[in-house]
Picture 1 (tube, rainbow, N blue to C red):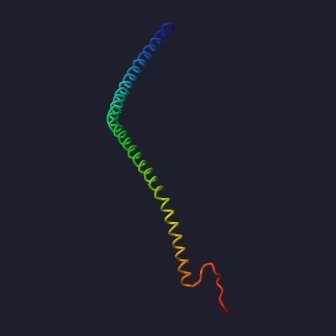
Picture 2 (cartoon, rainbow, N blue to C red):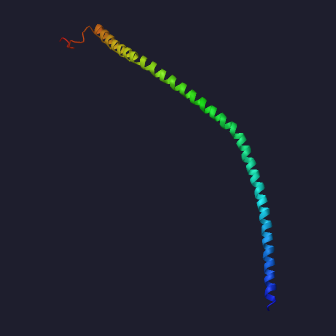
Picture 3 (cartoon, helix red, strand yellow):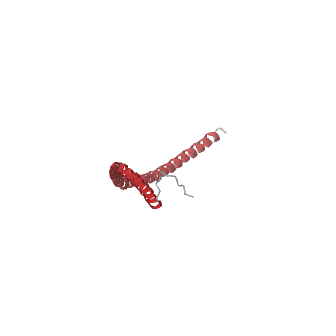
Length: 126
């Protein structure tokens, strides 16, 4: 029995050594495959970066120009508000004067056609 134990132990050790070698070979293969996939991913990201960099620059230019256009539109709007405020007060006064003139003219013609003044009561002689 003494000799079977060391032989069994040797078999176990050889089997374990073989398993470690097979495991190491599998890990090397898996890591090599992972390395190739990682290289492909890095190349794809570099290609994407090369394509996106000019687009980002163009977007920056477009945003800057849009800001300029927006600023010009805002300046024009402010100028229009100043002009409209300057024109609005005289137009409101003109509208009010025209309304008063219309009411006064209507009252004048009404009094002219009826023969009565606006201040006299409307009393008929019996």
